[in-house]
Amino acid sequence: MTSSSAPGKIILFGEHAVVYGRPALAVPVTQVQATATVSENSRGGVWIEAPNINLSSAISQLAPEHPLVAVINSVFTTLGIARPPACTVYLQSTIPVASGLGSGAAVSVAILRALSAYLGRPLTDAQVNGLAFQAEKLYHGTPSGIDNTVVTYARPVYFVKGQPIKTFRVGASFTLVIGDTGISAPTKESVGALRSLREADPTRWEKIFSQVGEIVWDARQAIERGDTPALGELMDANHALLQEMTVSCTELDTLTEAARKAGALGAKLSGSGRGGNMIALVLKEKAPAMAETLLAAGAKRTIITTVRAR
Ligand code: PMV
Image (cartoon, rainbow, N blue to C red; front, side, top):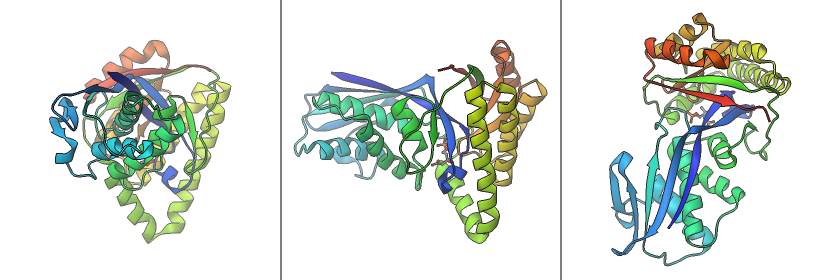
């Protein structure tokens, strides 16, 4: 039996513009995890058991483009295994789905690592990242690749689509409260909506994406020098541009406003928007009170996470 876990992730800055070549910053969220466990079975064939999504099936009974099946098959293909041994891939996850916490990428990475280790030929990080990206395309259409990168390497990432992974220094630890609207919002839809807007007026949208790119660059520098107040202001500015991109919603705006009124240094939606999560930057000792504020303002759950100086 082999087992592997992968963390969730949260985008700090630059979502959506990252699809159009601008940088983005993201960090792992280790409070939530996806775990894959692979064990021998006696019923024959390769099975998936995923109680969270009520799935229990031989992969031969599912469509080959089912993302979980595709991930499993990609391991066999990469390792050149034509006749896989009878085994069961058991999945557990505490990462809410379709909420911007990288659940799809974490499940893919956990499967890729657990299954390749079970077969005695563990994949490299670069292979895991590449195969998880293929699966992200099945989940999200035209993803930038940020989710699979942060989840695979489990460290803060300054991400530019198509470029090798770059990490960054965190000058001073900072604390975020993540507030979940409880609204499940498929990434594919908001990315697609923005794509249509951009096609209708590329000049306008490229300018906005470049403004986001500058915020991301400034934010990276603020994080490196440990300037938390500047980081908060940049979060507010990024949220305003995301509103302009039509990817916020009433619930996200209510939560970000409530956070600012309660003393957050900054707040913004995180991920694809139109639901999913927002983040509020707070002093560590104020995080529990901020979590209460967000719950009172309608958040369905909160997670407190500290990005440690490194
Ligand atoms: O998967 P989410 O909700 O964290 O958002 C993905 C971030 C986007 O920039 C909107 C899309 C992408 O592929 O980068």
